[in-house]
Image (cartoon, rainbow over all chains, first blue to last red; front, side, top):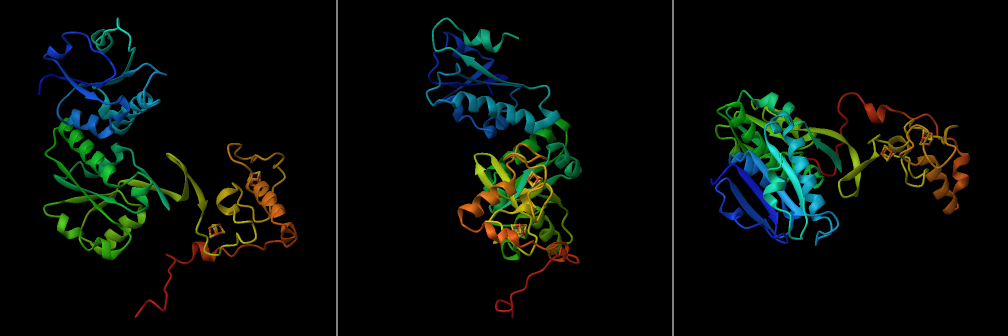
Length: 111
Length: 222
Ligand code: SF4
Ligand code: SF4
């Protein structure tokens, strides 16, 4: 395993230079954030990831219309499903603009 | 179909935390169809239980299997094949499945993984609603096919109640008054006069019976 953070990202989004080289982040590209399944997130936690993010396009700009909203719901489902065992994990949806200027790293690690 | 809901995972875990090997058993019947206990949900629960076990530092493994049904001894015949070293089973079927496994395999520890909610219809993605309470003496030929036992909070056989001032139910404004709906439909069908006949007190023995209700078809039994 490369690192402790897994980022699922919609292929419509252009990622900043250098992010792919980071040792602490594993990136998985999805055709749309809405393709993410609850099972994939659980599997990631089973594999030892402590942080899982799904990065989708800003609301209203998803090519599948509501794929990004679905992704957000699925992350919430994982948290609800695991109950108290979800504590300690960071499981988040991040909405990014397709325009340049926003960096994923800033969004993901802003906290 | 029988509508079920997954129990909170804390409750499922409480029952099985002491075992080392547990089978999560799905059902492709009603429970699978209403996305509670089909193949996908079995995979999810297995994964979640294994994750919880790891977090709790337990020597534990969950496995998964899904049967076509759990409410039929024929479908349950294969169960022993999946029980090698398994100490307990979590069933994701409705309560009927859990009961039948307990009947057929008295030495097996079986636990419900779901709550059985009602007999209902699928109204749209992720929405199910009760439509019948299995009273055993159906009278919805008199009510335009709509069941006031299942759909009127007061279960009125001769409605509507005095609180039905609008199309909404006075008890639960989220739903329309089923007696309003019944009258509109009967009127459209030209059958409004059928309401002149009072529906008499219901004989609830067909519902509550004496112990489990049973149906036996002579033409099918030998
Ligand atoms: S009258 Fe009885 S059998 Fe008929 S729909 Fe209502 S509860 Fe079900
Ligand atoms: S308003 Fe209609 S549905 Fe509600 S309790 Fe009265 S008769 Fe039943």
